[in-house]
Length: 508
Ligand SMILES: N[C@@H](CCOP(=O)(O)O)C(=O)O
Image 1 (cartoon, rainbow, N blue to C red):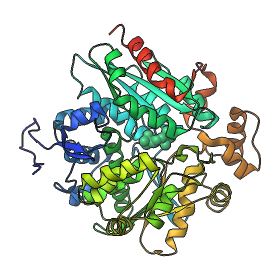
Image 2: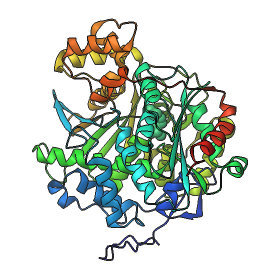
Image 3: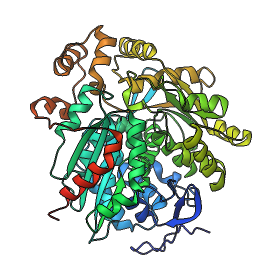
Image 4: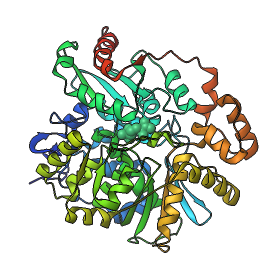
């Protein structure tokens, strides 16, 4: 079916094709999948056989981050040449991360934290969004231009703006829920500007923003009004080019555990992953399919615990109250990437996936067959953390281990400890998704019992008290002048995209 094999030449002659999760006849190449972002039938692009060409695990101990990335991308993006992948990786990671390991693994007390926040915007999204523009640049036709849309609950927005800012042939438009992101996240977005960047606040939550962005991709009227040669794509993890770079840090974590002598090659390990849109934890599933010895991926939700309930009951039901929590980047009820997992765990049953997604659209819920639920439970466990537990966790971990966690990482920590009661012996890695200074109010409330009226003052107080350094990008935030973001109704987004996209590309 799909041949994923190197031919020994610089040119990658592979013919594998991506397809939609909802239609096995809708085929595209990896490059098309990245430039398009989202399938025409509203499905997500998937490479059907992830395990066809396993990662060379026996070589992992000798690899640095860039080499691991090369091996992962060659397997998952088969129509990119080795040279294209190498150049994209170098451009993405050689200078923009403050740690040479890119995603360093820290031992904290009796557990390991994979720190994913050493990129330019201090969140894990940088890992994908430093590389996606480089991949897109090598995939887009020379006579075309791409406006990349991002719905954000805080972190994706800034990382997308930073990654795509001033990239030739590309623009980026970000939609964030008004009042639904932290003050630091908002300021980051409003100060990360370039001539091809646009930001708008929307009246609604992340799900409203994401739903409308998805509609815009396949809105014929929008496409008719765009300047000729303009395409739309996505900076969210629905874009396979955003998700695949995240697979790399699972291998990197394993490599660092080997290097530190904490495991031997072949040992199974667990990961706990705070997740909202399901991209981060799905990347772990991809790593497992490529051969990484992962026993369990533990999904950590905040009070918006639709995923935890799903794993409990087999029913995904978004008909429930939407909470604004202390972990706002995970304030999401429609976890888009779960669709990809349903595709893989049902052995590529596109008809079933289409049916479930139709149920979700029409009734706001779906139920999976018992056999599928069993498979999901085999690979994943789940749990959730309330705001009160997030605060208590931040305080406790700081008091016990002098490690300062952001609220999303604390969400993960709490669920990780619950899970470890059932499996205390398998080595566990907790993914830390963002710098605590992106959520200073919540972190200061937990550690200091209060926060100041403005986030800059709180940042200083927290840094003085904890001695944990503020990432440079967040330190200089307060010297920059924010732009004013328009406030849109979700129904106004399409018209705004047309107008701003044509404006961005009018001189190209
Ligand atoms: N949590 C994100 C929003 C959606 O996630 P993504 O991984 O699909 O971009 C955010 O903080 O913006």
